[in-house]
Length: 620
Image 1 (cartoon, rainbow, N blue to C red):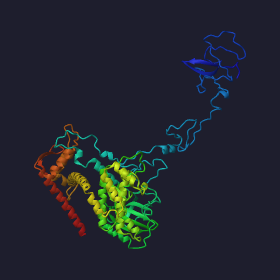
Image 2 (spheres, helix red, strand yellow):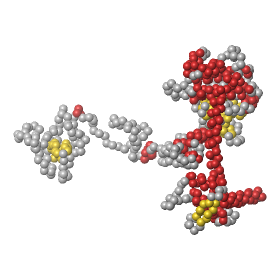
Image 3 (tube, rainbow, N blue to C red):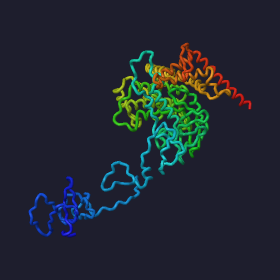
Image 4 (cartoon, rainbow, N blue to C red):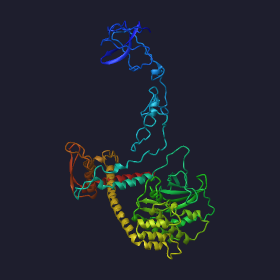
């Protein structure tokens, strides 16, 4: 490049400046003042003179971007541009930029380039659509969909068709049971809301959670399947730990939920791993525990040995209480932070009352609980405790004889230690042999009576002549009254809720009868059976209750109207209603008493036809 052929210049185009080089023979007529590189200007510069930048000038930094679009003069089809060459010492990027070549990048391992950080956006290769489908976010789980895996295998090799059962990824949306608006306080005594006709939302949610927990099954996985034990199948682990507990029984233990083949009920199975039964009389010790039925004791069903786990295991079968938690999990959670507030004294007295009642029943049967531990006492409801695993040590330590009186005294001592641990918020393993300091803490936090009762339980039996469960029940008599009153109030509340559901069940049976009669396609070789005689009146009554419309023809969805009409039909009142056909060509004035009689007659005919058909089948 020489100064005789080309010059660098800066021109203004619409207020924007562009750095370019163009031929001086260009067809565009723009005044240009030539300035040779080797000489000096003989004419004075003026404001119209363009600024000049030498092509090769090291040490001076350009003020213009190297990425600016080159300027092309209008009408100059034959004009050419030259590539700017700058000194490597004054450039940001060394060397020319490489050409872009499409590549198949792995979306899972691709990293940020050109010094930019990943901003969380979805990167993909437009030349490989399979990578795009793999990186697309999965659809939100719909608990009401019949096919949960319909969208998982759309063009993606990582999601294959799953024929086995897959557990939902999230629980049911229980908040849908709650009312949208708050309760109205200006209702008349005879007025009711929709939610007043059914179970309270909190109670319904609690029952739904327990029902879901009882019906939960273990997701099928290749190579991972729990065996069936005699009549019990569909085992589901209830332990949240990876390894079995060995601290209490001396052997690893596991807890499962299983379903019985005999009657379909669900039971709790406790497996003692690695136990060899040497004496057949040991397992018969469970028979004494089968007779104890108490509200604060988990009922023992049976015990048996099995080798289905590829070892010698002992299995105890107990009654199952869904969503129950141990006292250790409830009062000493592993993820708690900070200092926990002291427990209410009324709750501690409630625990003592329930424990004393359970121990009285056990000791009266000449047995000992031997399982009063935070990890073996479960909480099945609000402040409702139950002793579990009572019969396990009687079988495991059958060959080591112990006096029943000594074991019963140990039950009372362990009870005092458990209450002291909960009252002082101290795990039992942190309680030393000297219990005077924790007892002083109880005296500062709670009443003197509670401290004396815990001290009595922790005292050696030699210093107290009458340290028995009977005596404990006698001393807790004033607090039994509080527990009994609370239990009776809860029973009255539950009975009231069951009364509501009783009415709902009665209406469901009535609707079932109407459903079997209305719109029946054929009966007794008569295709018009449901459209004639009293069945036609019942059809009009169905439209009156469920298919009503207002003056504008909009559907009327009034639950109060439906329930009121069904209740009057079930009672057979003398009230009369006006029924019209859909084409307004037929009209009837009929009472609920007559409708009830017609309903019973039509349903009786169906029952006779069903009985006749069954008799014909038996004849063949």
